[in-house]
Length: 308
Image (cartoon, rainbow, N blue to C red; front, side):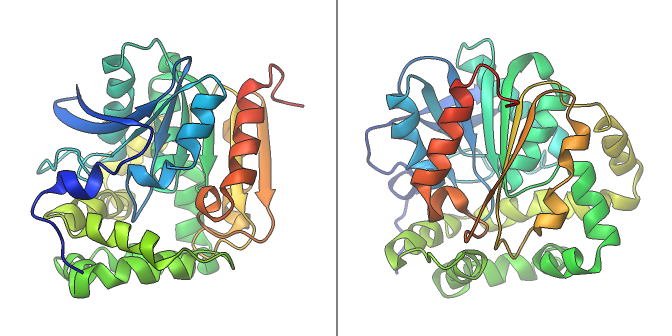
């Protein structure tokens, strides 16, 4: 697999959407957007980029929404800055993009790390978050307690502990044309495994210079801050309840984030909270069964009484 010289050819994949860059929080962010209406902002996880939402973008646009998938800081077509990978700053990236798009608020839809940041943004900038949908990621306080106190969850998230080593994780991620990215996505998926062509897209994106390092930095902060003042401060800050309707989506076969770890995040939500478990799906429910995932999401977005 040969990686092209420029990231644009790797990241700006063709489709019905439009690609452009927006400035927010002191950096430049690549987005793919489609449709008109209330903003739905889609946030990818690791080891992916905006393209993970390729199934949801057209469906949301057809349902009457302005669907926007952004590349997080350091990933895809967005800026790779030397610092700024703590969750508070990454959440400000997200809310800054909402403002840069000229919207008063957004429904945030986040998967994996994108879900962690969506929870954070809903707490930090509640006026900019209309609704919250999170897949495959518990509330940050729940994540912290599960990773520290639950031996099984700590083992399931062993890759995060491995990321704490200097330099070696980056080298392992990009070795053999980022073969590790393909293995991780396959290992974390349920029975509906992704096609080789899909994995190659993610492998190419990870091979863009500095992407591996920037992708790992948020996880380094999440672990190294556990015993630091900034980590304690963030954990206290996240005690503030989420006060917008929240949809929590999870695959029953997720080997990375155990169902037991994710369930119970509703205790941090003082608003309508809906838990939806997808039987037979793994860590990527929006890709493993896009129709079921998208139907659940759109029905919830359109439901005026989402607590039913």
